[in-house]
Image (cartoon, rainbow, N blue to C red; front, side, top):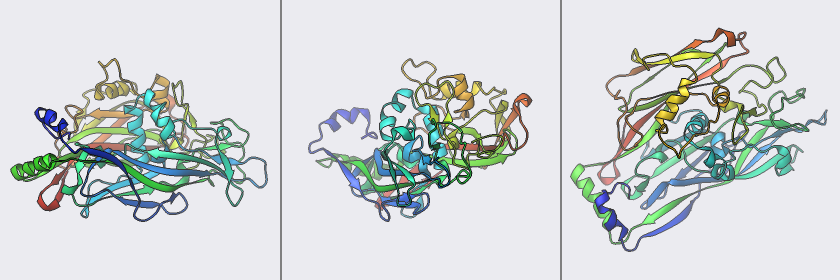
Length: 459
């Protein structure tokens, strides 16, 4: 109903025969995903119904399998990652009638973590997300511990994931699926590297002391008993259908705006480094840059720094709320002294902001600078600089997803560059401060729906 003019809201509230229910959606191929097994699952959204995409949820039984050490008394436990199911997804794609509606960026969990850090307040993290999506990493001592057939320790938890990034963020969120061809969603799970681990008889976050047979890998995860749910609405009297048909007849098509993401990455062997990307779209809204660790070994000079290995969770510094997160989504300013974006050689901003200035850009971009009732998930300078740092530039007019007000690059293939200056006092030897630099662009695309369920994507 969000596409109805406000003048019609009173009449829409008088619709007779309105019903709302929640339906269960079974997947088309598998009911399980595993880091060492089946990696993809596919589902079809309900047809000939009005669904609320914001209510789309994924339910699963999560089993984290650790490693039993045969030659010592120290087992290694795999912990449920912060973010729940979203932290274990590598790719989420949506298609309709053979038309891909998004770019299917990899890794998906990085984008999900960026949005959580910058957009969610602590009240949600410590209430809804803590119950459904494991926003607080639980130590193995407080978890339900079992064992698999080989005697490896297991931790079991039931999780629910909602708020998927991409097409399900569309406006209006209530879609009449009888106007669209059948919509399919494909999800691919990540590798086992996303698993935070904890050693036997240790405190969560402690560095690994036993590595003779573990070597930074050996834990796995599985998602089983997977199913999906969403809210379905029906309207009596034919008023809703008549409005949609009238709009189709007058305009020839209906437009559904939704966000899309692109991801560019580059690995540097010493500290932060310049990163480049190129994108062509009609509304570039935001650009993010983060850096995560990409060097070190389990028992080396930098214990537990490598995101490519399974490592103990990172202790968030001076944080309020969740105390730990996995290293795959630990974004640090590292040796970044200041930086600047450039779009087709135009500097943005017109001066070189510091690593702390970047947080002020986030606050203003979320329109929180004058709000007295909103906040984010960052609670100190230390937490920002060491755990959740992100350089961001906002290019759109406002945060209304129905307004295509970002920078129009539809007629040119733009060149994006993020160029930092390094603080030499913080730069270590090559390999010890290696980083993977990741640039994420957020743009608004439009799904254009015509007669006879014809669709096209306007980027």
